[in-house]
Image (cartoon, rainbow, N blue to C red; front, side, top):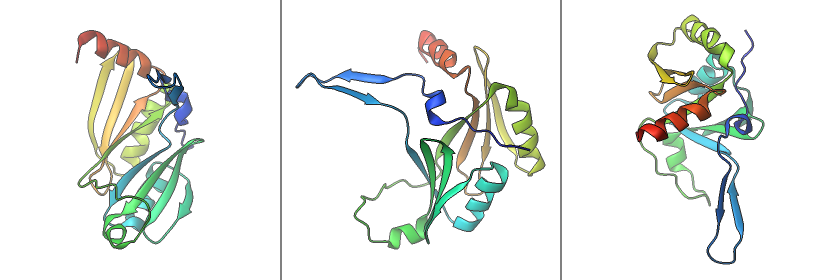
Length: 167
């Protein structure tokens, strides 16, 4: 079964622009370039993300695995114990415990993804109907990180509806 996760640029809803008060320079956030999840067993996590979600590996190190989640976005899995021993010029991220990421999927693939998760023995923790045609499936990876598959096409309308309700 082919796996289709939409590129970050497809589901960036708002082009965040801000007029700086000093110098009048325009600044933009184009999307999330990378997200990091911490794992106890890198090989086990890599197997889950490549087999269950079908994400391709773009780079591997002793303590990290880089997975492509779109043309301009990467998910990095760090083996926490090894990462804490590493000396690096990059500041420590400091996250502890389970994390969360949401992956955008095509609207017409929600049922196929549900079936794929079940075929791999992944328990669906929760399904959420956000209104405005948006639906999410929540499940956990082997390190208890919360993963969400969300309908990309209706995502902007979902946030508009939430903002109107003030929640």
